[in-house]
Length: 254
Image (tube, rainbow, N blue to C red):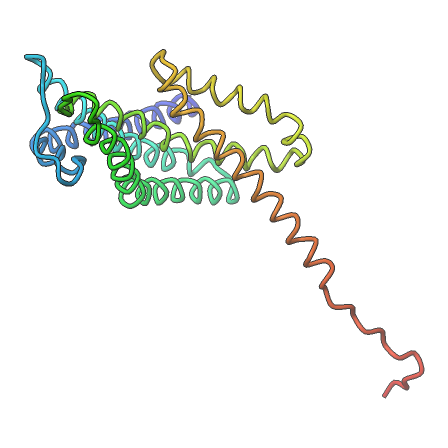
């Protein structure tokens, strides 16, 4: 009977925490939809005066898709925090500390990513690709960007950046139980795995899979190079470690 009461208590707590996450997501969706036009202007490149629209419902569904992505992204963070608070009483001290550090690291990583790094990448890519469209002088070609296509490319770029943190966590876990030689030996399998993940989360076209697969491979290579530098640093520390002076055996004790 006591176990049944405890189970009901924890189920109620879990329902409350899920309700917090759901209502928080709905609240964020209402806020983002209220300020949807200002939200889109945050992602517009500097100097762009207009976008074109070719469908009657394209603007509405573009607004709706953007608000859903924003609200679910923040809602996922709320859900993870509520899940941690639910599991915290049943974890050991080191488990709770490790989970808390990973959660805080993930939140700080994504905040820095989308506040500082993402706008720089978007600006750089826009300047590179728009230069080809504006300097095309072979024929009379007018560059008129489409809003839905622009946001679709931003969403693909966001996917590539979003999965970078889970990949870093997985690679660090594998690094504990494997050696560097295995990573070098099975590098080709890692490349195939990266493009398999890209094919699973992107539309069935080569360009989208390449935009996701290549950053995953870059993350793998960066992790491998950092591993090599860390091992070389530890070797240098062992070499430069001072030798303890032996006590003089002929010295008289006081």
